[in-house]
Figure (cartoon, rainbow, N blue to C red):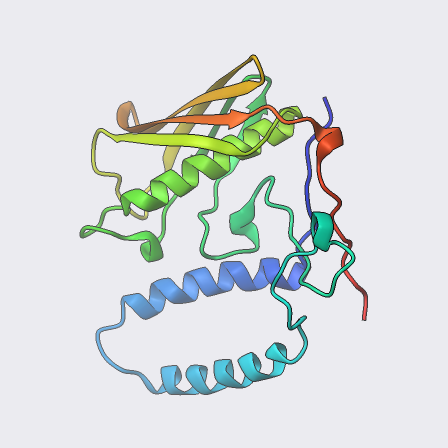
Length: 211
């Protein structure tokens, strides 16, 4: 089936900025003391914040569904690779093969919880993103209705990890089971339930407005 998309593609500058901001955050978190470069960075960011703030819609409502003809903000596609344009989300590589998928992920310093360990909440976010990516790529997707994560071993930062996902669809529901590995050691398991939605029933999404 055709890949599922819902929303507008991110701007190329957003993709460039996300990776840079994620790396920069890791560097800032590792600093041992205040640095003059940070003073300059803060001033520059404040200036950019003020400038960009005047160029976005004042209404924060996304232009989706009944609000599509309104004056709100553009809604970016959250079907796959959210971390590519939003540094708050993890990045990963995934290979989809029907109802099976596998891939790799490395969590940088911004996702730290206990010392040297990935915060468990980010693992839940990762599985939700990767499972939704899988569902959208095979063309049957929908809202997540439940997500549970079983933490088996601490998940290390800055370490290449592997993951697998398997899914089944029955009676309008999608059940996905994911596993995160370090070599052969299972770090955590996730079970994610979602609605198998009707693509024809998706609400309208307004395209990006070209200034």
